[in-house]
Amino acid sequence: MWAFVILPIIAGCGSKVHTTEVNGVHTLTQGNLSISISALAGGKVTSLKRDGKEMLVQPDVHPKYYGAVLWVSPQRDFWPPSPTLDNGHYQVETISNGIRLTSEKDTLTSLRFIKEFSITPDTTIRIHYTIENIGQETKHMAVWDVMRVQGGITFFPIKDMHLEGLTSDLAHTSVENGILWYDYVQEPLRRGQKLFATTQDGWLAHYHDGLLLVKHFPMIDKNALPPLQGEAEIFVAPNGSYVELENHGQYTELHPNQSIHYQEEWKLVTTANAPVRSELLELIR
Image 1 (spheres, rainbow, N blue to C red):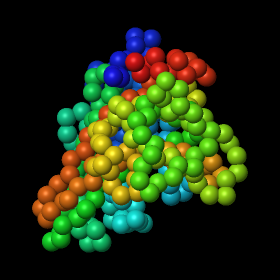
Image 2: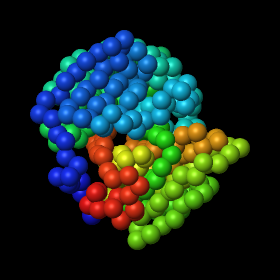
Image 3: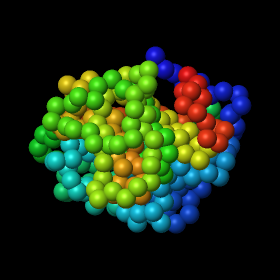
Image 4: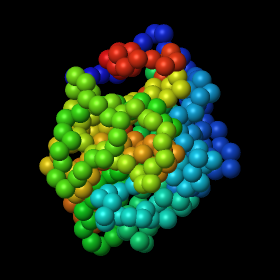
């Protein structure tokens, strides 16, 4: 079993969360960690920084697919994402150590999103997603969390990569002692590549340019997955322009006036440049 323990050499905790807003973008800052969320662009996470270094892909890489977003799956039933939920204006409230953003009622999907972001004293980012069925019909769906990062090293404790109806075609992967590793290689791709899997411990990590990110999310059995999706997925965009770290929640029958709740924790820490695999695992242990 894996656990998050932040070592003293990478600590840099602040004592209070500061919130600022500029042009609809709300930034939470604690010590040398900051996270920015746009209330005017679908409650998208537009920036995630430590010591001034950016982890998330910015609009100059792709004008549409950047930052981190909440979608619903399976993709076959909810694609493309609803403009109201993905790009619309969200109402903002202050909560303890963070903010809550609430979407408009979406007439296309009959859903409403509520997103809560906060930072703990040890600089863990806590995220609570709520998806409400505001319509008159039962929905079958799951939470789909998508984060776009620059290429680096992606890894997680793998459980199963043999999922019904799915074939992973992501190159440059290997498995060592129960950990799946993807080493990004910049190369021309005619199309995107993707890996589908379940995890052993419910986390997905990524290293790039002196930053180590760990996403911790609820584990689900492969029998509870939304159709044609994995619990953890890695997607490499055409031409290798960016990498997506994706996780899916449990496939749920959501009746009218019911809600799905999904909680995650993100940890972003600084590391030595170009650490070896054993050092990355040691930071997480």
